[in-house]
Every structure is written in C-alpha cells, then in structure tokens.
Image (cartoon, rainbow, N blue to C red):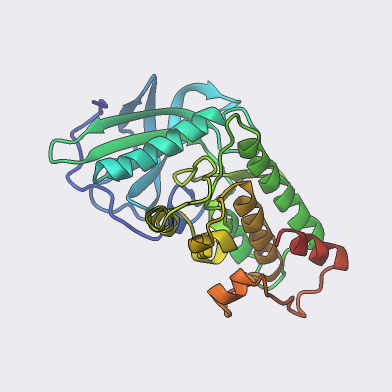
Amino acid sequence: MASYGHHMPAAAPRAAHPAAYGAPMPAPVATAPAGTFAPGTKIQVGGHRVVIQKYLSEGGFAHVYLVKLPKAVDGTDMAVLKRVAVPDKDALRSMRTEVETMKRLKGHRPIVTYIDSHASEMRGGGYEVFLLMEHCNGGGLIDFMNTRLQHRLTEPEILHIFTDIAEGVACMHYLKPPLLHRDLKVENVLILSHGSQKRFKLCDFGSAAPPKPAPQTVVECRLLDEDVQKHTTMQYRSPEMIDVYRKLPIDEKSDIWALGVLLYKLCYYTTPFEDQGQLAILNASFKYPSYPVFSDRLKKLIGMFA
C-alpha cells in the first residue's frame, strides 16, 4: 500500500474529458476539487517519496499533480504524478499496459519519460494506481494549438512538431516485438519547453498493443471491433479499423494512417473526415481547405499516409 503524509482523501478522481488525462496545464492553475491531495502531502511511489506541490488537472479517472522529487532526475527535481482510480481489473490491465509501455520506451527522447509507479487494492473495492513521470512544462499540444487560433501554425512549425511525433511512433514500431500506439491524436502529445526550444512527446499509452493478425471468423471480427471501439478514436481510425469484416490485419499501417490524420489536423485544425464520416475513411476521400495555404510538398506528404 502507498504511504501518505495524511489520511486518504474520501473522494476518488471522477471521470472527465480525456484531453485532461495526464496533460498538465501550465496556467492557469486548476481549482482542486474535494478529495485531492493538499500541497505538502508526502506520497511514496515505488522508490520515490514525492511532495505534492500543486494540483494540475483532472480527467479519465485521474487526478494529476506537480510534485517534487527527493533528488533530480534528468536535471530537474519536478515531476508529474498521476493518481488513477481504477474501478475493475479490465481498467487495471489498461493502466498496466500504459506503465509497461512507458518502461519499455524509457530513454527515447520523443516519449514522456517514466520514473516510477505503484498500484494497490482499495478497501472499498477497485484499485489505485500512481504513475510518476516527466513534467512536460509546456502543457498539451492541443492547448498550444488553441493559443494559435488567429495566427495558425506555420509550415516549419508543423514539420518540427510532426517530426518529433513520427520519431516517437517509430520508437514503438521498432521495438521487438513492435507496439502500436493505436490512439495517436493531438490530445496525446505534450510539450517540453527549454526557453524558445520545444520538444513534442507522445503520451497516454493505455491503448498500446502488438499488431493483430487478420480475423478469420465472425466471432473474431466482433471481438476485434469491440477492441477497436474501446481503444481508438473514431476520426483517426484506419479503414481496416472502420470495417473489421474486411478481415485485414491491424498493424503498423494503422498508426501510419493516424499520423496522416494528425498531420492534417496540425495544418487545418480539423480532421480530413470530420464531415463525411466512415464512408470517406473507407474510400480515403478528403479535400484540402483553401486556407491556410501550404506547399504542394506538404499536401503530398499528407496524401502519402492514406
């Protein structure tokens, strides 16, 4: 059981918008709901005894805090602690997937760095998981994009962001055996800032999984469809995810497709199939808006992912 500087708060984290899940906001400071840890609370997470500095955000059954480490890791003594209320063993498996994936990817620059973790069974049922990880002080990519609604991202900025994200995906695909992220989207990218320099890092690995072979039976198709519905985001799904009854494998190509959707979103602040729906995804049918204006080379790059 994790040890605390005071008694367990009565309230567990509530469900909220998944964009807040693990994505610390630099400002303004969120108002801490009832039941959260107070600043100064000491918590043992694996081999690290951390001190709560402030509450950051809530979402996805998680409360997220900025904490101080007992000693610096990678040049900083600040980190992020995600406290997750896990209602059942199925959700616990998802958290275990996230933790194990982060462990396997530790040391890769475009991946949010894993520091430590701890899980325990709660007296009232369910589980509590603590995940200690790198503090990405620039907040979420989606929040950065929202600060640029009037002055959209430039082509060089987009290519910089996309290069970091694509490198992170490559780190996953080159593992032995490979892993698919399966939920690539702008909401799952965080920013590490050093002065004017920004690095963009993949996060939220709860949907990660190895490639899946082509289903052979109707039952296998149904089970695969349930898995896709649960672990992926509609607008970023590849055709073989949209129609599993085509009986195609779900492999690295599905992440590559999602990268193309993500690149389009960086350019146009919408996804290519936002209005047309699933049929457009199946036919890879989309158009480029007239504004903002981007080079033909960038548009061609987007098209290569389809």
